[in-house]
Image (cartoon, rainbow, N blue to C red; front, side, top):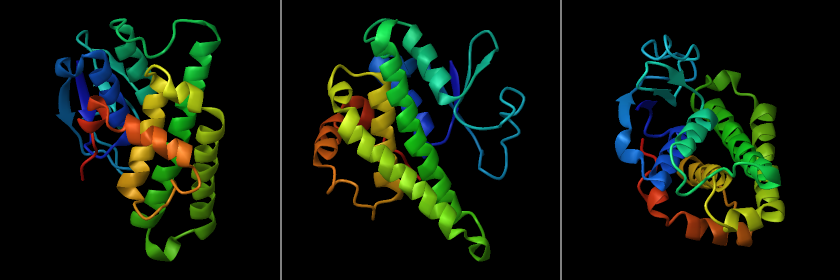
Length: 204
């Protein structure tokens, strides 16, 4: 397996944490990319029209994207541990938790692009505020609604949530999300010490 990646991408991190948890990280060859929000990587485009990372190339020449699909594929390769239950209500709970983690990441990326990529004279304060509100409501839900699932056996939803919180620390270091959410902060402190998380801390 080959993976187009960026060392700072939280979605690439989610894939690699999944691979670490499954014992498969050593089977993935990392391919450099030059993808950005305003310019597609033309090396990736023939396999993924969006030109975005992560994009995975399989041995048969086919491609998988985005992070949810790639992580689910990696999870399917063995059963130890199973990161998305095979069926029942728990399967959809884990998938919904993953979607919440990704939604927090989506908003965080849009907020960052607004401040570091958009020309200053075009900065849209209401847009920025709206994204930060999405982040805050997502964090509130993680603490109020999801701690039981987060705190159980490792699953793909917890990985997505952990990567979202890690991205906030990485790119929004001045944002104090912990004070109002001590239980979530306590969970993340423990989760972030997992070898899979320590091995994939973003760079750049």
